Length: 131
Image (cartoon, rainbow, N blue to C red; front, side, top):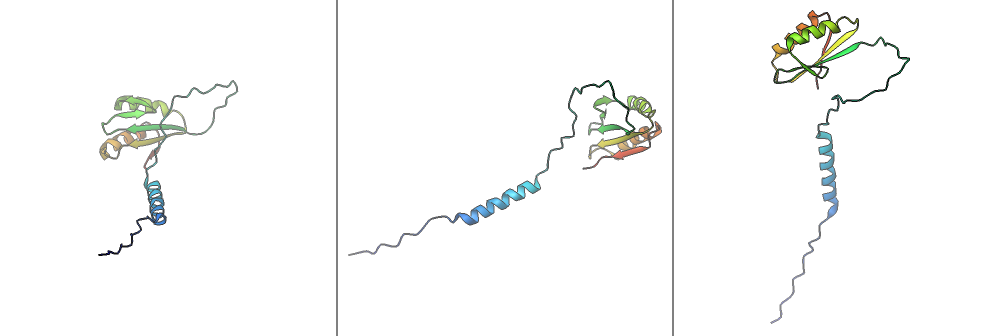
């Protein structure tokens, strides 16, 4: 008895749709990725100059507040009383501005307390940083 051979099926993949799907996934992940914020300070030793001028740009004060209720003023940990004394020193310059960067899980009352300390020291230009 003679059996007929069935035609072998072609098992080749068509790569064109697969490349399209991979390209779309690549675009999706590139667009949805949260980019890293590199605004953290670095220790940089800047050169000095004999002919430097004092600029009239406002002095920027950065107050950061963590979820553990830590207060960081321009990179240094402080308590509320130390913050109050430092703010009165900064308020002596005419154009001082304060930026508050508070953790989103922090209670609103803690942020308002720090804003009150800054405003009572004489700094009226207060900003709250958001993402």
